[in-house]
Length: 84
Image: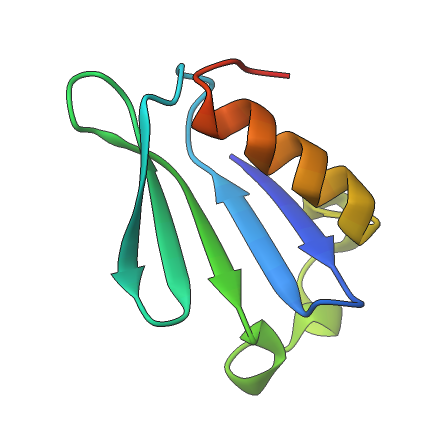
């Protein structure tokens, strides 16, 4: 599992597996699910997470802090089915 946090957007990306993403769907108003070709959940992107999770309380080795521009390029790649 891999966690990436984007502080300027208050967004947390949780990757469960290293599978190829085929489709991104809204799960809730604040959550996007990334699904593989067998409809298994490979990752979740959560917005507004600091309302629900104390990011600072998570073990530092689990959370990679990123810039928003990294997330935008990563999400564009995932939507097309490519992995980085």
